[in-house]
Image (cartoon, rainbow, N blue to C red; front, top):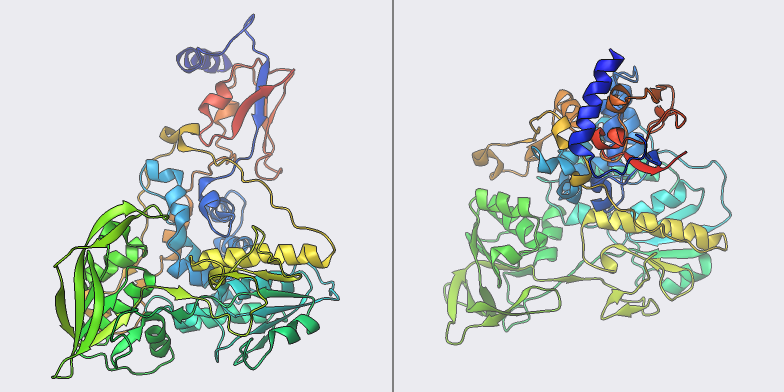
Length: 564
């Protein structure tokens, strides 16, 4: 049996390893087991151990763990970086899936859908966020803003033993998660439950407390040892044209805030939403559910829209119209009570600093659209009123890479620094917490250099059998446009398990056993009692350096390095 395997291996070696220099049947290189960064994690804005929590579930039978316990383990690993798995499993545009190597075979792993199942599982099971220490630190930290970034920072500091107090200007915590995202995307009970998990760690929350208003920034500097500014970008931009203050003209942020506070707005039968970002899409889809015929007006083309692609597709599917290469130049009140949105056609010119082509007005192309309401969703910015001491550039807080400002003991992150995804804000909060922890201990937080992710070309994709991707289901179109009920339903537990098994464990051994079976010298053994990545063992006294193990490793875990 050994001879048969050896013959097969020698043939394999001749076909794929002819470039290897061999002296007297041996080379001077031996296998080295190198844990690599999976591309899903390198693309994740919170650096979640995605491979790790998928593996907990995928390998539950091998580990003799009930699936329910494996999902507990996955939840604990996931929430080490992100305390909002049920939230982000619903709203994140999943850049992790853009990096997934499986997309080069039969479609990326449905990581976002899986994360939602894990998050909902944690809430159903009543799982509690874990502290890193029981020691109480003799330092206090103030967090300004109870949005995703502020709450993420509060969570990471509280689990490290710090006394944390969050000051929130609104009546409830959540920031744009609560007031900017419609309930058909994110049910309020899900958000509230995950916020409660953070507060249960001992985080103090004071709502209706506007720093720079009824709470002075200077008083926080005196009372607290460090401050994290996470006020978000909740000031909506107006159109900046004549008539933009007329009744019936809203800012996108103001409109969503009122709707999500439960206020009933009469937008009429026709609504024009100006803008191409996520706020524009949300405002348009909400207006549709209020019974209006909706058109999105955008000065560039669909290809340049910064909104999440899936949300744009959903808006199109629901019947929202798009008018591209058009921009408003004024608003006027008509005699019948309607509004006239004066517009001009645009063309794309030279590229601007962002790399997108700058829209240029076409001379003599003016036109007017009659409408009942106009919603301006063309920009947002932070409200730093009363916080003039916080270093800023045109109203945006300025920090270094570890979220530290030039003002001693003051850190900042989230949309107060730059407009980005909610998951990016969570990542900012986690990084800032590490920097604050180091600062309060008299040190300086240093980031690890980014690791090179393993590429699909480093792997043997043919090893993995084709497996169909599992996707969430949506409410029927005719039903969902008439209510604010949640549109997407989660994967079943069985579907989530099947999806976990689609993970290819890029860059980490999953004990496929190929290296041991194909080794012509029987130099490789395994010990399943060892932790992940250490199960397989090479005896260098037997190894001939033939490179076969590295060539046939499916996940790119084995490299050839110097041996004996």
